[in-house]
Length: 127
Image 1: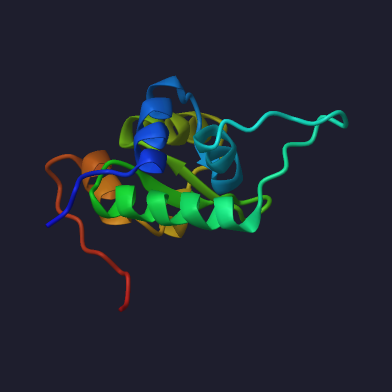
Image 2: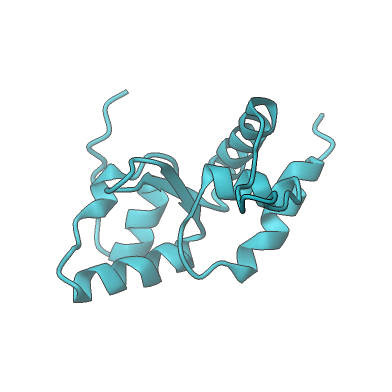
């Protein structure tokens, strides 16, 4: 039986209401471990911290609380709630840069279903 969410997952969930745009795994790891920049203004995240944050984010995505997509410039995994993704893609459509939802990996079906509303969605993800 599960004991509920872990410390990292709770910290990540606590940071979600403050989001205004999708956040990378590195940024979420820094938030979860409360890391601050050093003298050179660089935040150092260890591989263990990054891996734990990544696992926590995957579990939150499996629970349907967040979803992810790759950034089209740097190809980093970005995470956000469905509301943040909706606002982000509305901005992208206005700027003429839409079309990124097809790169979404975790939580993609839930995101597209929320975007389409009552219209039917057929997933093209092959497993």
